[in-house]
Image (cartoon, rainbow, N blue to C red; front, side):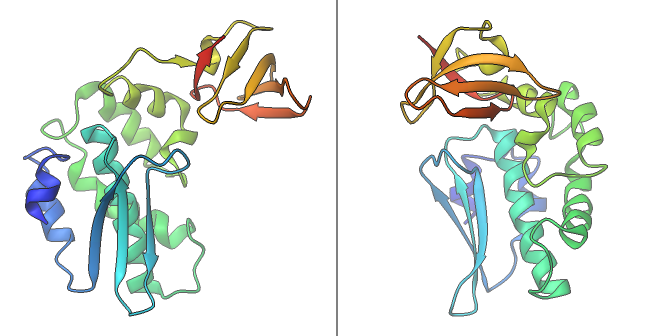
Length: 197
């Protein structure tokens, strides 16, 4: 396990991570990129628990995602299976598990302030925290991406699945975008990666 994770996690965080993963019934698998999620947790029919994490994440997003999924395991172990997936039990577990990692030896200073704010009330996905998601993307290998908030009003863009949209008005936090082919209206978070057409 350690050899696998060394490629994705800072050496300063490894001892704490390995300590959290010391469970006979917990399996961690590293997967190819999935567009709809960074990672997931599930209880397997044989009673074991499995966490999967995308291999394309930068070291900071990888660590946050791994701790997010370990928090699901801990919440299940401590509170049972009848809790909400991202309810108060999970939030408290996530906060408790993440706290030792929130230091300048593991995260750069520009992320620490955003992480401290995020972990006051963690969301189901760090991507819903636009400022944090954008800051984390600064550490991706290829940062030559365009985001919805950068697209001029009325311009068209394409998303990962090939669908083409035209950017319309901004609501409070998200942008209205009309799918060109169907005329359907969709709401996009500002930090969705797109390709300008």
